[in-house]
Image (cartoon, rainbow, N blue to C red; front, side, top):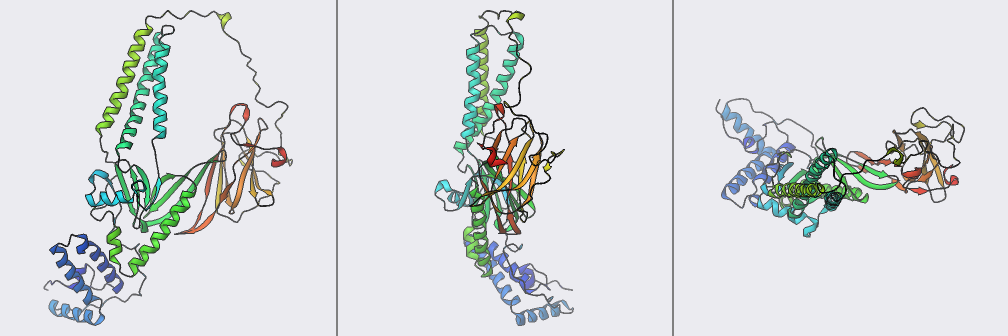
Length: 498
């Protein structure tokens, strides 16, 4: 049987392909070979003519049947009929749109992609939605703190002569400080020399993450799920842990402030609706104009590292500075007198029986309602269990404390504050309050070792419809204790707690 070239071959579809598959294949090939994306080259114009001619035949039932009859005649076999299939609504989530995810070093991007990305950055006047992911403030702070170690060496070298053990300790600490200083200086230099910094961007077609030298990008319609956990510490907002699933693969981000999460979700919904509308009306120009990575191949790996000369210079500078300071301090210290030997009568003595409780407070043997404290973290018998028709959760993290706590989740209405959950969290443990209804709440708790009472800042739990169901809040509140058992939160009276 003779092999012939058919319109099916031109559109790269099976001969029994339903009309919606043919239509999707046509869109895909148009996006790939359109002259606007290929500098109006003669090859792209010739390819588009073939694609348009083939689609004109296969999209017309009469012309397609005639083409099938011609194929059958040429090949000398029975004519194949298209497989009947109910029409389906196409969307950009199908594989018909040849826009792929990828990871690439910024320097390896084509000039077109570089320019497109730079136009998206908020710092360059771009109008796209962006969340700043990182900065250098803490790197500067750590650098100054590490330089403080070198100042300590210089000052301490003028005191008593170091013994061998002290010298070895100082040398080891100086080496560690130099490596940490080099790492922070390297990041600072890289940050200031990077044109893209660290951003999470939402564009009409992509979700983009930049980090100094690297660029990650994912098509927006490949998102299958989004989840966020708002992290609180002693009632104060810290950050939001954001997880986005792109075609089943989870990517984690840390963003702030708290309202940035909802703004990001709203922007994703907006662009998703626009992309679907453009796809349904065959608006190829929309995809061509907004495909920032049209000239890239997609794929790639995040393991590729760009070696910077500034990184080597940063570590060399830090090691040289630390080494020179240590050697100079050692030389100065050798001229100092030996430390005098202390007599036993000069050593101060301390009372080994330090009080761990506030004055007049005795830890209760049972809860205020008379119920026994649970043996492990959990709800306390006898208290009301309310606001259970929700999906959100509040995790109370008591792993940093050496005391048990009595905790109440309180619903804040306009008129009153109502405890909806009362529970016990053991020292060094956590407890997760689940199925909490949307609303405004705070957390109030008592340190059972000291009797100290505190409450968190008010917070709001929400539920909103999302791509794959309902988005809800998962909050983590970490309790920390400071000296004398006081909490880094708002103190409250017993009337506000019991």
